[in-house]
Image (cartoon, rainbow, N blue to C red):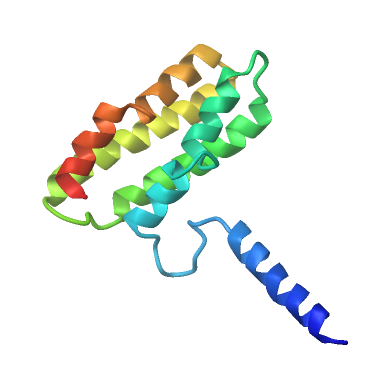
Length: 138
């Protein structure tokens, strides 16, 4: 009789744990892989979600601003993460630019400036930029 309630509680804990932002994991900073997964892996990650929102005729600026703030927090945390391989100086340069582009997206979303937000998002989603960093550090 109690088993279904126990299972429901366990499943509920997984959902709550999954809803916690990746940057709020206590003293342990997120890894580069965890950050990039949250930002770019799959159609429900932040980069494609923001892009889809910006394509709308009338974007939901409240939602885009919320997502862009999370994007900025994660991109800033990426600057502090250890590069999986290679040189720290190049990692610092690459991640600083990525964080600046994320901040530009957040600022444009706060101003409800669709062209500026789309331009900032395009920089963040640029495959050439991604590959430059990935070929050096992944």
